[in-house]
Length: 210
Ligand SMILES: Nc1nc2c(ncn2[C@@H]2O[C@H](COP(=O)(O)OP(=O)(O)OP(=O)(O)O)[C@@H](O)[C@H]2O)c(=O)[nH]1
Ligand SMILES: [Mg+2]
Image: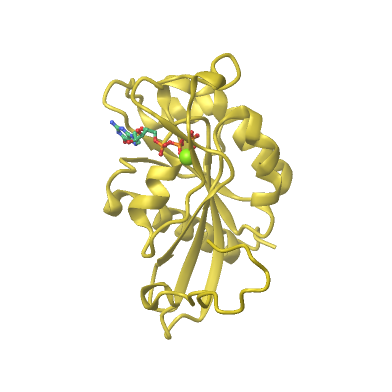
């Protein structure tokens, strides 16, 4: 890149790629956040379900992070989100969701409140090996008045619990949906988003969504 300010011949800034343009049928767009603890699969979910190439802010986890960063599962995980993930999916011809994945490392949690601003709803991604992180996550969403559903990302070596046991363990209200998913699969991630949209719709109908 040429940083010489006197050079007026620099290449024009490229416009949006054709495939990134909003479909002309789109009439409404809503913001959804994907939130959860370290390494639960937020970036994977945004990447698997997005219609456009997702924007990610992943940094390689290095020796420098030892003792500072969480390291659960880091034998297989080499990168972590430091700001956010961004993607987009058309749920119907008219409705488009903008997806914002949050960073999971505790030292970046201060960014969450900004990411929650203007969000219509959230997906709390849960790993059953580390349920305790979810309390912080759900507490923050409740404080901000962002309705959420819980999606259990089923890692192969994670313990399986019946949904009602999970509901009790997470101290979740009866009406909050809990779904199982494999965020590596687009269809599974899309099902999670559809569940959230149905939940938000039912809240709107009951007058609980203001
Ligand atoms: N086996 C299995 N691996 C998964 C699944 N979902 C994600 N992974 C893997 O688990 C790792 C964690 O995924 P990420 O998407 O980076 O998790 P994250 O929540 O964005 O992580 P942070 O941004 O660091 O908090 C990646 O190596 C994924 O390939 C799953 O459902 N099953
Ligand atoms: Mg991530």
